[in-house]
Length: 456
Image 1 (cartoon, helix red, strand yellow):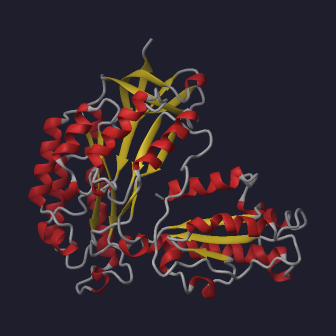
Image 2: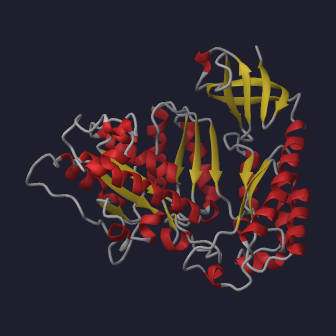
């Protein structure tokens, strides 16, 4: 979601004549789009703000700052008249809306989740900053008293063939460990006409693949009562009727409690929808899942996996797994390990529980020591590495349709592509094929990347 919103902000700047800076050290404006899901993400932002504080002082002629700052930045001091403007947006900006600027005076604008429609005003103010009568520093763009989310226009990155398309925002689930409902607010679904209009623009830009985004895409509800499977049907019908360049449709993320039979059938029967489902389980223990307020049991989740695999035999399943939740026992860890062995995910995002201030889990007793969390996490990482290799090895010898993404980083005579199941594959082919669909035979597996031979 942050990537999509960052791409939208970039489009606004490009449309007004701005260009990308070669590096942060030489920019006129830096926009830091933040995440609050884990404390480590916020810690990195604090470090970046400290750096830009030094850079700002350098530009203002502070000799001590000049001594401390990189030579790369020092070379830029005399190169332009506009002061550096620092903008912080995203979930961390929402969470620390009233205190961030006080703690970090380097920040010129703090833009909460519901205030992003004001970015045009910020850009205008920065453009006028050369004028002596313009003072845009130390201003906060805050929430309205009754927040309402406005979807950002066109989440597109230049010269790419894949694009994110947000369809809903916010979350109503209130998992006890998660800060997202507090910084993203309640669920808001995007109108169908806005989504289809964005697809038309992306098609004009020759985009070949889209990923529909939401904190929980399964919760999509249009103003006319349209649910997510119906939205998928509307989108793919529109793409086919308009002869769009877009041939693949993906979606993330799906909450297991809301993934319906209707959605499984749409994925199975609709030729534009990729056979890949990211289905976060979080934990394999029914007791822990209840404490997390996930609203499904281990048994319900495994039954859903069986249903998906029976109806879509070639589907690839990926997931999120959290260990170290407060009160988690060794038996709970074993339950998670056994679930992973039963499901055999093709890949997983694995992490240990990170307390977030203001969430119920942060106040729970029996917090797990950090070293024990790391030990438990390493167990499932080691397991998943083996499962991933074994599952991908089963695909060797098959022939698949792939979207060519770029030249391979490791071998300039090869191309890197992605399968409908969200796997990477490299093969020898001319650079002119980048951005096109081709058919490739999978010859072997190297790490987590297939090697193949292009047909024809």
